Image 1 (spheres, rainbow, N blue to C red):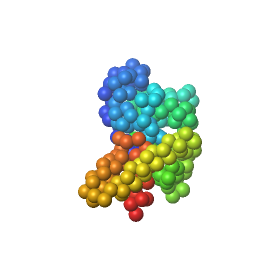
Image 2: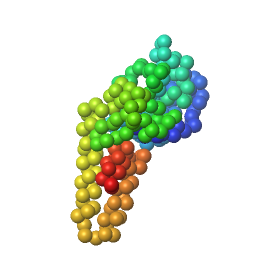
Image 3: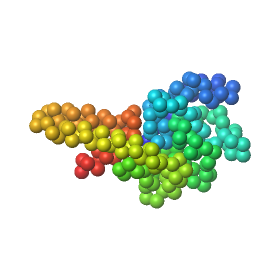
Image 4: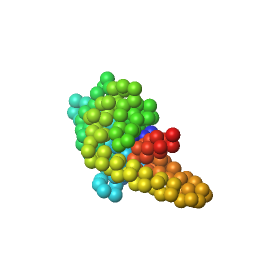
Length: 193
């Protein structure tokens, strides 16, 4: 999970008309998250339909008054959205990447996501959204292995210039628009030491 910047709502009239899934608004959330799930950081639209996620659930008895509030909407994959369902804990709310930097509460180590310094909100976010589910761990492992193979290839060349150019290109894989960038950035930091 990485920090996201929520854009201004491009079509507030749709929200006023009780349409939180309007294509213009969904596209704005997609662009803001780089077409990645706001929770697990996997690319979405090339494999599935993304969901417009209600951070605080719109379900009856929860927060129905926030169903059409822009600041309560996000872009999520079906697996994270379904895992979260209508869960929400007032005293320990989930990490919201639009309102805070998740790296203050969460840390990537290898393929696993952990809470930082015993952060209960981090623990609950990881547990309830199943952010260490087996298929996600496998996807992270493949991404890290591909990245490691590329780094290894950089160090096989005897040309310092080529190696530095290749490593500079690999550094771009840690940028926020790349899939699972938090895990790649963490792997790179651990291996740079």
